[in-house]
Image (cartoon, rainbow, N blue to C red; front, side, top):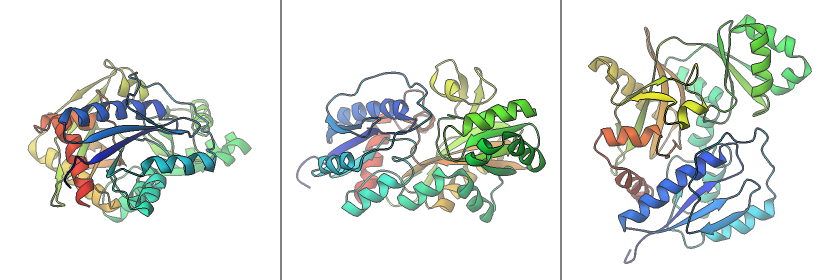
Length: 345
């Protein structure tokens, strides 16, 4: 290629993580431009599905999104896709449904446009916490005991839903939407009243709810980065100690004072290696590509896998950039590397 590769950074979207995506996209856009290696443009998708090319993205702190997502008219997507016509590669900075669940990945793949991160299947599997856990169990990874409850069941009889959770999981438990991220819709419950409220709240975000036993251990996360030769590298482990809430909730993730994030985590070498091995194994179990970040608890039985993020956040407070810095990889180098991995494919 005798010219600079044209990179379109896609961000926003109709999911409840719209603002988080804009924050990630703005950072990626600035960093890629700063390298001087690419022609870079932002493609911002509004909450109601309008696609627009832009040279600037509003810089703002992420706010919790709306629980109910809008249905996007197909004409908006059809018109929007035409804006991708001259892209050599798309940097996906979308989080949540549509952008991270394999929908957009499948569209880009059908158009023959390279993109950063995992393909349609791995993205869809990782987005569904329940399906991902089935694969984690199959591959011998430790996961928490859980039960699934539909939003329809909760609306029909919240008392019956509470009873089924009490029988299968007990207290304390963690209630979360099966799809989505940024801890939106996630609650802790240690009694029937709290559980009923948590189930009804989570049901506003998704049609299927996952309830897990509350795990005791040190909360850690580990990112995996694909090299240009296709090999996988686990980045330094980060330990997360929330300060604002009882767990690593939305406020803890996007507030400078929300949590202490120790990177590299102060763990013995064997525990660090065990966490890194689990992250690589989870990444491979789902068939992820490019990069991922696996959230875990370090328990007495070893690392327990919670979920895999196929498009981790790229905000100033995000965990993947912190782990990369600890490994000697500056943010512009990180995002440029992800573009190069996508172009190689």
